[in-house]
Image 1: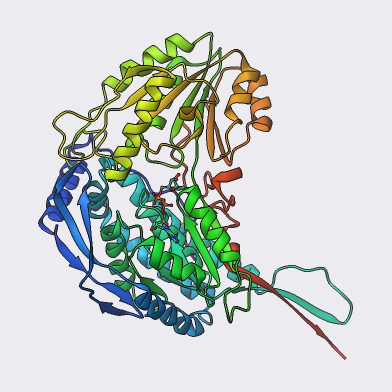
Image 2 (image 1 turned 60 degrees about the vertical axis):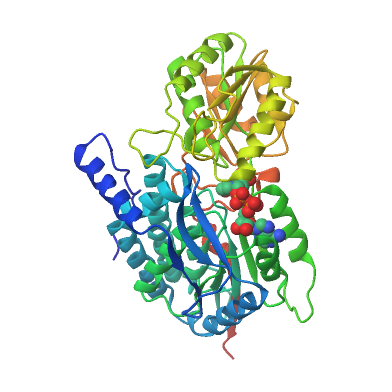
Length: 520
Ligand code: NAD
């Protein structure tokens, strides 16, 4: 019997022992930078000539590792390996599969600082963001293991309405071999979460990690193999999304695709997956979690400290590179100037640099494309609003650091208020009244996260109904969802609302089989 699931705590780095442990982990990782990592197909290591080079975005002279790069031929091999492994894995009982997850979580916990340190190096995450990512990965394993056990207990005997002279049962069985395509921004949590959920439900997976974060995925594979995940159940296949990812999406034997990433790529996957390939005998199940233009809404009567701190944390945590990042601050005119002023002051205190160093809040954005994109939106912002702080690349930076940037007086329909930037830029939008706040908040194509800060109980109740997003928060920031505390997934163009880390999630990777025996 497993103890109840509890959320993995974050280490407090103001405590000297924790700080020392993280420093030691960062040093250990530093001594391992620049190594090579093979593909893992059917349990075999395959090294290719062509490599993906992973850099530290805060100092691009630092190479994190060289990872073998798959092509379509290797993608075919990986799919065949997954198909072969599925035949045995689907028969492994739910509770046995669940134990693999507990074992993986246990090993991740033992190496928590080290895994976090890899993300500081490979992604420019601050220490606390890297710990949060690691903790979330552990949580996904602990939680889905318990969910699998729950489904095992109930799934064989899901209640159905009794019928005379018959025994009726409903079972949940896995789908088959599928493809997991994660983004780079939660390179351990989302990557491992969307891989292990189908696996615990009895499916096999080809994991195509994001090219900006392949080393942390290799570390996760290392742990899965240490825990004896059978060969072919998870195949590690780094490679270009546009060729390898696309090949797997179109493959006739692909039974499901679980994707998290941008709206553009998500929609194209949806389209390609809908086309019937030669020899295909099922409708591919497609689970898409995509972008956001999330909001911090601030009412006329509210706690101004909570408002300002939440806006700044939600906008600039991990350089604004979260799908849940609060890139719009929609503020009631009564408190607009005051909140803006407080946010500017708080933002100026955030240190931008190389996050390997203790106390640095922001590192570089992930790559050159993100750097150029963010700077181009800053130019747009200068035309659409008033630059209050930031607005340029960090002087003397060795990577892709951009100053945390606030624009005031952005119109609700301006590009800065509508388009996902995925960088450290927040648009302040002035609202006439509470109804106007709601109207502005709901007025994008997305619907992922949002928050309202208010002291008004009536407004809280109206907002509960009217604010249309998958994850809504009151009197706190709109980032930082915890597994099974706030199951996560968005509305509209933010995705299929799959609610990762929630109690319906594993069923997305199953099909229900109803069996009736009539006693004659
Ligand atoms: P992306 O769409 O560029 O890439 C995501 C993944 O898709 C990568 O592994 C990439 O290699 C792969 N890919 C690219 N083209 C492909 C194709 N044609 N076929 C198959 N696979 C392909 O996204 P990203 O830059 O890695 O991540 C950032 C985006 O992810 C943002 O829009 C962010 O909002 C979103 N995101 C959403 C959530 C959520 O839960 N809703 C969580 C994290 C990130």
